[in-house]
Length: 427
Image (cartoon, rainbow, N blue to C red; front, side, top):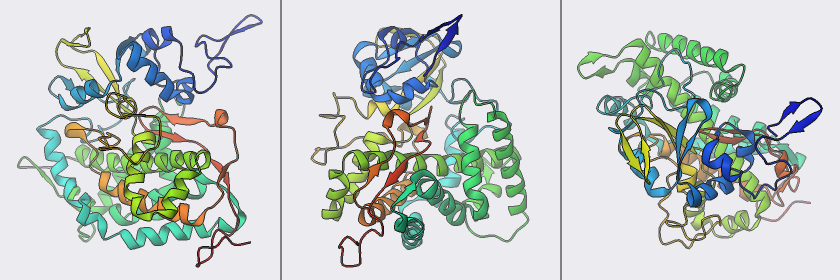
């Protein structure tokens, strides 16, 4: 809880002491003091965003030097698509992280941003990703085999972190997999604003990528995305070293944090709503739709920032050139004007126009990788882990929750040994 002490009296400036998790932050906090870094907000993210869509869909916060918060679906779409008015070139975080190089292409606008995307996109098409299906499936079951007989595990460490990190290093970077989980932890620290170790974590990531890409330039071609980056031309000129590092750095940040966060949130929901994993077991033909609905509800990519390049009006609010604007994919995904019964898992929607992977020119280029990983992981987990229970009070879950959202720890229990080949629960 965010608290401060005055003499012997403990005050709660956020006004959320003993407030249930389904209640939003106070009206004043939402309208004037919104702080996306607050753990109190992380605990009450969706109720608070719901309140802001109703009361102040475009609000100004006095925190972190001042910035705007945008929550409604249509406004989020307008900001995301209008890169000429809302620029990424000055960074996409509030406060702006102090990094040695720009993560690319997320810190760039078209047309340069498009030139960067042309280098990496061919390696993340559905066809390019599909070749890893079987290896991904085997990896899911190898990880589950390591803890299924115990009947309990800390899910983030046992599965959610090692699953995507090891695969991404092996299949896409062709990098040493024994370094993957550690670098995943480093990236979590680096992307946590105000974390005391964040500057050191950014430098560790930068140094690792610098040494890795320098080594790859001297090795034989492997035909992967790293080869494409280190040997690329940008509008007829050789790619610079800082651009190489920036592109590989963002691949790591995007390839590790997001899938980990999604899996952690999905598992919490499976424990709290057992009808969902049972539905997927009973109707495997609905797996794809189920994953899309889970992404709408619990997408890990929740917000991003832009900088206004001109004065503009949004919902009657006057945003000035140079102002920072933070907009919420997580809020757009639960906007009742677009999604009926938005806080409920439903597979009978006529359309599911969620924006869990963003929208506009910066839409996540790794979405095909994430979808494949999540479909295969969810199928393996729900097929083999039965009677799932969350072994912690949800109020005690600590969140890594600024632009990407992930529970730090998800201790769970389940039927030891899972199911037999015939589908029966083992004793």
